[in-house]
Image 1 (cartoon, rainbow, N blue to C red):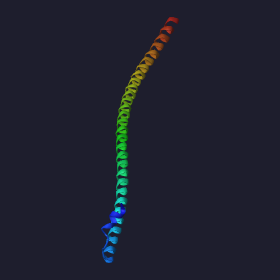
Image 2 (cartoon, rainbow, N blue to C red):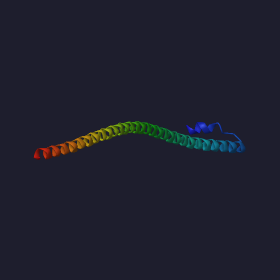
Image 3 (cartoon, rainbow, N blue to C red):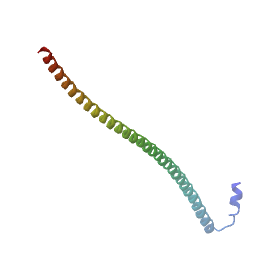
Amino acid sequence: MSWAIEEWKEGLSPRVLQKIHELESQVDKLKKERQQRQFQLESLEAALQKQKQKVENEKNETATLKRENQSLMELCDGLEKAKQKISHDLQVKESQVNIQSGQLNSNKKDIERLEQELKR
């Protein structure tokens, strides 16, 4: 089949044949260059897709971490409120213990005084 492709060149001058050969070489060179650039383009597109996926994964991870952080902050707030309530309850109970301790001491003194009066 290649002989049919070459048949049209028969009878052309050597100068024209040389120019045709140069043009065919240039076409082959441009085809190879185009293939290389196409391969580079496909490689860059694949790398871009990979980076886009990586960015999307990072966004998802960031969103997950933000939600987790918010949840932990709410938990900490709840624990802080519980701590404050327990601390307040403790102070109230300590006050009650101090009052009762004072009452106990007062009652002991009253008992001692009454016992002394009984002995007399």
